[in-house]
Amino acid sequence: MRFEILKASLATARVDCVAVGLHDDGVLPASTGTLDTALKGRIKALAARGDLTGRLGETQLLPDVPGLRAPRLVVVGLGPSKGFDRRVWRKALSAALGAVLKTKSTSLALGIERPAAPQLDDYYAGRAVAELTHAALYRVNDLKSGRRPQPHGLAAVQVAGAGGSADAALRRGLQHGDAVAAGMALLRDLGNLPGNVCTPRYLGNVAKDLAREHRTLRAKVLDEAEIKRLKMGSLLAVSAGSAQPPRFIVLEYRGGKAGAAPVVLVGKGVTFDTGGISLKDPAAMDEMKYDMCGAASVLSAMKVAAQLKLPLNIVALVPAVENMPGSRATKPGDIVTSAAGITIEILNTDAEGRLILCDALHYARRFKPAAVVDVATLTGACVIALGHHHTGVLANDDALARELCEAGVRADDRAWQLPLTDEYTEQLKSNFADLANVGGRDGGTITAAAFLGKFMQGVSWAHLDIAGTAWLSGAQKGGTGRPLPLLADFLIGRSGQGA
Image (cartoon, rainbow, N blue to C red; front, side, top):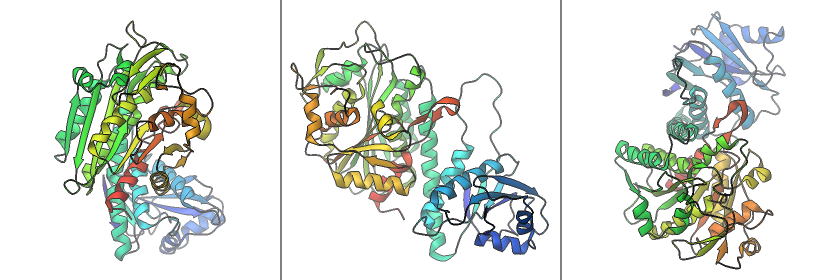
């Protein structure tokens, strides 16, 4: 896919399709008005007689419009001019792209007016165009045996700019959005794979493939014997019931100054989660193949960093396991010793994510990190608290939490900070070990984070709970690609390469 700045006018652009917007109150955005003048009032006339409504997300394809060089014109509704904002613009842009993809267009000129800065600046407009274009083109990586449909031929998108430094920012946004979209595709593909394909060993091979693809990445994949030597008893307690051996993945990106403290990303890699002995309800258990989306997120973030050559040092850590109720599986009431030497009473084997993450977080300390961010489909309680709209953020460093939440706002991948105070740690007391792995029903998302926080004392750390945002259920079942836009924006911001 090529993303370019449109050099010609919309009327004279040498493309297969032009897309513009229309408000439902009769107001023509500036770019649409300019095109309408070239078309001798055609758009305004069609709107006046009701053939173009302007209702948000409604599209109309107009072929062979006199005065337009392109053979097709797509007009998308922007809703009322008064309520036109960034969210509305994204919806309209997605709808327009969907309409274009129903045609045989291989090139597109986008002239859909966008909200003015600070609502949406040139850089983030470019990011959004690239990301939403790739999202519209994405096809689920299913394993159906029938003939696969041919991919759409759209190969070039030109975006109307404003000239000068604005175009430079727009161009950088398009480039960054292209890289983020490639990472999102990898994340969605990994999440959508079934658990019998995407195993811990498979994730290890993905990390090795990324290192072969990018010379700035270096991968190390530890097997079960090496994990035992690291005394990761908590991680091994989760994998004990499975015939699939665990892996511990270390993927390093060295784009910053030698010796500069890295950002460490830790991703939960439970490639399938039955709940173990604390077996889950069968309903929707198939969706537990998405329990490795934290791992896929951090691997994808490394792909973005390498593609953009970010001047930053980053380390991704992935504890990868399968949680099964085998004859050797850990039982409720068992006590294990983590790599940090902290003993844990496992009251619920379905609270396994925190058990593999705590050993990975302890391992992160050896890098003397500037910050640690873990990403995990950790708790159903987060879905109850925040639904499917916001990723949960909990941290021992409020400045880091704000940095992540602000990155989410900028990237249209929103997150919300939840409290993490000492009272919640009290719920994790055990009569028999240093910690229990669950703290009861109340505040389940927070007590899970409080458990992890016990292994991050003295380190700037934040936890992203993506249980509600990593995938969709129902007819549209599939990975969403979140929270990669947030993570990418966080890393780009830290590297000084953003807007």
